[in-house]
Length: 352
Image 1 (cartoon, rainbow, N blue to C red):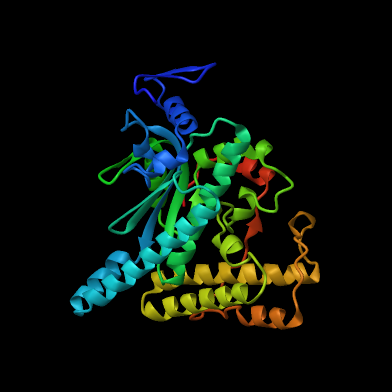
Image 2: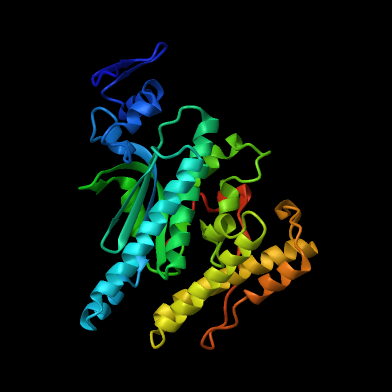
């Protein structure tokens, strides 16, 4: 039985003064089956004795862009129920998609996702001791952020925010910690609809690079891209759209294209909103062209996955490329993330 005031795991003794070690000890000595039967199943921050306590965490804070404006417009037009159904469907689908990915990665009890008004927060407490397992948790954390963002985009909602690392706690009533404050400060500067890495997140990623299994096809570096301003952000299309080859991939590419074009159409007359969707269109095109370039062998040496595409699929993918929007040139100047490119940013203070 886990004791709230003192935990002895053999070679180490953990006391109340170190909540992080207590959390790790609880994870180690409490079977998953028992934790799943608890009321705190879906929130690891509440699963441990002594809660509430701040735990070192990876967190993602994001704004659902246009939520307030669309809410006001629908309420004014008397279509509030329709908009409510739309956002409810989008969030429900996104939650289920995230849960499915978490189940596949045996990660169901390791994160907490909360939305309130037009904001979303995802917290991932660091409870693993072994470096390799921490690296796997990092990979899974980025996958969940990518999954959540992807599904909301498919339903017509853009996300903008940041991923940070630091002290954090969250439950149904409160979200608190320095990691959250850092992510919120970055988001206040506005900008493109992307989830960027904060300085604390970059330092954390660099720390765990040596523990990544190089034999794996996917690692956190493959879930990131540098934007034209140099900032690294979550590349959700790499995971969601550029996964398994075949009809499913093509269907997702077309669905993403359709969501972008509908998003642009729905905000005609709003240049600021169109610019945000234009950024997504440029990002979409970059991913499509990147895959086509892989077929023709025009990618960098360390970026080749040996993808084999039929001519029919190449044609379909080329059809997914989006033309310039409302006279706005689509920017496609993105580049892959490497450990060296992250180190260049490690000491730089930046904003979105």
